[in-house]
Length: 467
Figure 1: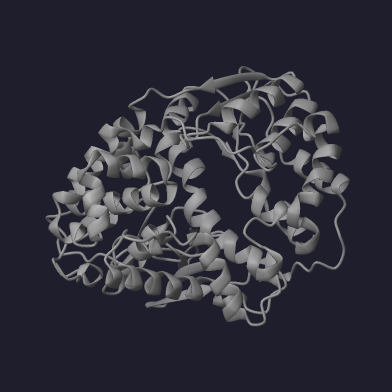
Figure 2 (figure 1 turned 90 degrees about the vertical axis):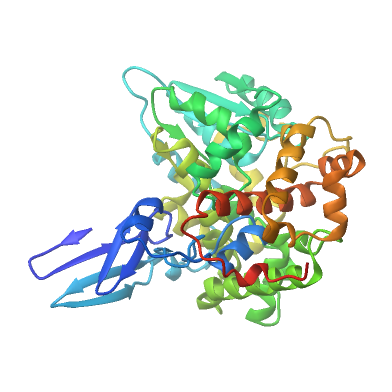
């Protein structure tokens, strides 16, 4: 917030990472780092934001300035509210990263040095902590920390995906780096025990992070800064940005292909939703995505920035920002302004397929570590193992939660309703990640409606389905 004798202005960062929410009432704008306080500045009834919920269900997170409540907005990237001379105005500014041009390839050595300079110092007592999965982002950052001589401890947990590749692949990396390493394996019923608390922490804006809560609690007790690899895969490996996306003939075609890639077609899975509900969810979410990314039309890095400003900032960033923080001092080197600009200067085609990233790993951490197996390499197909989020108890709780809300229950298609009521149907949910993700999002919607039942209006167009 900037206050001068003439004016007052509250603004966000260039990526909109900050959890900053506003509610406008009359001539005033109230702002808060959480949604909840803004609900109580008056006693009026509140309305669900159907576009927010459509994207939460289709993609896993809201888009742009949407929140679960129509009355509360999240301040978007590079925006501000300014009050001066009795007037209130909304402003926007052009982030410097929009001027980054992929004129030449920034060498892996230069990128490695830039990232190394962004690492936090180890405290006098304690260590620098680093999340370590089976992927490349955390490996790169952990390797840079280890090579710098900082006291470092790496942390790994189960992704609860029935495969646990992270637990298998992170150990050899930590040993090769001679780094202290701790694997946190949640209890069998951890997901069911944590899902309500996580919903409150993330303000019911994403249902995909519950598996991280046991690790988050352990990190809350650790002393020292925590380094997380948020956005590395998008900026340096062009995640979701395929040749087909980049070579789209029109900006509208590019946005359509990106949305389809991000949604993974889950909303259209047979039997998941009543047909009219599926069509409305998809239409509202696509409209939101167009609004968020449309201003990037024609930019050389439009595809990368669209993913960054949608999935990364509104979905993935929830884990470091709302589960690890505020208890942890979280550092996110990949979204440092200098790193972001440098990454955008590397042509997208040279990053696709991981070629550039492999060179960067070899330079930054050595080929011995860089070429260890990772989740970016082809993995043999294996049957799904136990999944905490798909246990019989977890599925039974989700089914009961949905069944207790008649309006939400009517969103679900007949086949899915039957699946929730039979052991064979439950087994299908446990083995199909797409259906399970949709079920969890709809369950969170039902929980949210229950928590705020006394304040919400009964008019929910999104739920106007045929019984």
